[in-house]
Amino acid sequence: MKSMRILLTGASGQVGGELLRRLRAMPARIEVIAPTHAQLDLADLAALRAAVRHAQPDLILHPAAYTAVVKAESEPQLARRLNAEAPAVLAEEAARLGAALVHFSTDYVFDGRYDGRYTEDMPTNPLNVYGATKREGELAIAASGGAHWILRTSWVYNLAGNNFMKTAIRLAQQKESYTIVGDQLGAPTWASTIAAVCCRMLAGTDGGREKVAVTSGIYHLTAGGATSWHGYASLIARELMARGVTLKLKGLEQITPVPTSSYPTPPERPLNSRLDCSKLERSFGLTLPAWDEDALACLQQIIAHYQLDQGRLLPD
Image (tube, rainbow, N blue to C red):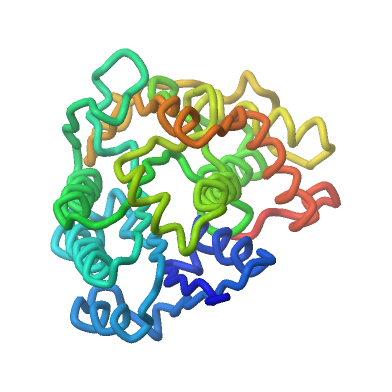
């Protein structure tokens, strides 16, 4: 039986790291090629094209991206190179090889002015450079004509990497009180769940090519339900208190919600990032977990890993 060759980008990132861990644990014959940044700079498009041609993958998993939302405003060319031009190269090469491409995108392709959950076919209108370049990447992939999934997710966190969950832990450990935005809504989504769902979507096919080919398109993949950044931070603080983690925070009432307008500095961010995931659940027979259940499970991992319940501080 021929082994499946998978080219994975961003293996040191939150989603990429989880994908690598799960792929290596699979019993099927899978060869995972996961170059580091030192081995492959995605901003070097010629090197990226050569790497795909050398690897000859059956499947490309592409979670790598330029994700520094604030910094993107001053580095639009680099953001565009990584978020639009690199995915275009991957899509072109995948189509040439007859391979499938799974690309990860973002809720930031929407402007957040719709009062409901965004479906995949709704008009996009990104508010900032990061969202605009991610949308350019989506369009380039669709234009390639190859087999592809574009999986939009939101508010990603994990044990590894920098994310809001870790920021909220540090705030609770270091400050007696603090403010946090309370009028932006979305679904915090665990990188572990993103990877698990992606692998389940791909299960049962040779390299995923056939399944991706007949189901090509955009899918929303976030945890179920929604909250605000304030609600998210409050859940984290409540669980830290319940588990005996030493905090400077005096109480949940000391986390004060404030409007986005309190932070007038660019870039602008969508107030509503809620995505409708029913297309993915219906198409692949999956039920996505509730955001708070996943958040508590990941938080427990962080507490145990960093021994926060033994008086230790989360490192910077």
